[in-house]
Amino acid sequence: MKTEEELAQVEAQKKELEQLLQSVHLTNKKSKIITIKSATKIEFINIDHIICCKADEAYTHIYLENHKVITASKTLSAFECILEEHSFFRISKSHLINPTQVVTFFKDRNQILLNGNLLLDVARRRRIDFLKTLD
Image (tube, rainbow, N blue to C red; front, side, top):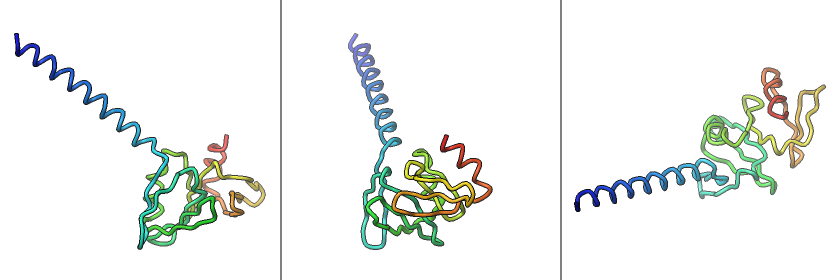
């Protein structure tokens, strides 16, 4: 009798642990904060405050709403993987943007104006996909 009760308790504990792990996993996936390591410090940035990311060989310059620019020692491809679940879009070989920061799209010039008066070119091959993300 004792073993059946013990087995039932162990099974209940397993279920509780699985539920806890699932909730932690879901919370981590939807986190709005990313860590950016630079040469001298580690910064914690809210994803919603990122306007765009610009490639510079093995580095990436991250432009924020408060007109601050952070240089990280990761490639733009690495940030593309990190930010893909937050709907960031790669408009060209060297730029990854936050679509919520788009102010204007100039059809005739194939350029976008972002918050902070950043004017960027959209690659011709990515124009159609970019317009789909805006809809």
